[in-house]
Length: 236
Length: 153
Image (cartoon, rainbow over all chains, first blue to last red; front, side, top):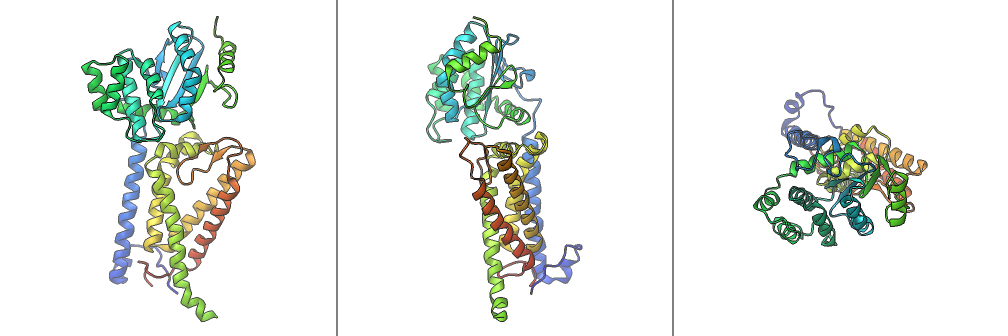
């Protein structure tokens, strides 16, 4: 019966001969890689306070893209542009929300999460670029309209996102460069880390005045959604 | 009969190492590219403080991959099996408490995770699988010496 020698000290590598040396070498390398990977993962998921922020973003809004800051009720929407359920939500309430934003009746804060993958990051970055051009809302709607049925399918890349931007009137060199360079990639990571701190565990997640509405009844029913807003103080 | 067991045991140990290591490699490997989702899955168990859950979500997939490589290559099999068994035990407790408290979550064992619709939960199957893996880990702790391992025979 073989018995694994206990990890007393490094003397094992001398007494055990070549085989034991290999064993320690492999264990050491694998251990080192794991430790480095964990450290890197923890570090890269921290909030980077030096990140470049889109012009409409304040750290106090949890890095979200805010419309009509200061008005009540406040609607926080946590979403991922690649999430099909978010597309459903947008289809049900998107137009109504846009109208409320234009009429300055609500403060909507969009938090663009990116846990589905690389194309979520690209799309969220491009949406932030569009917000600098005052085109966030139409770009937001267009992203959902063109959402791929498959995650990270290659549909969204720098070129295609620039083209989508052009469709809503974002054509400046600044926008084009912003999409291509991923100017706000670090901001996208900050939104994600803020969502993690606020225990957002699925998308979409919608809070009205800081309280999550009922996922089973109020997310995908426009009348129920309106009623929830009225309860929260929406006027006329 | 006894002789035959000692003849077969190193091969069974190898098989068990590959099963447990293979499952851990798949579980960790599917998650390392989606660490935000992994943190989300840990938070959804609603056991740990958010900040602790996030740290575990970001690091656990790497630890699973590391343990898997140890088991597959046969390095420190006994210790790796003990650690894997401890993980399985914690997973079983986590899933069981989610079931008992009536949470609707996916275990997030192989990526995914987070809230699912009520009635979409698979707690019993997940627990059975982890009990099986725990048994394999315990067997490896008892018989760590097997074929094609780097541990000294």
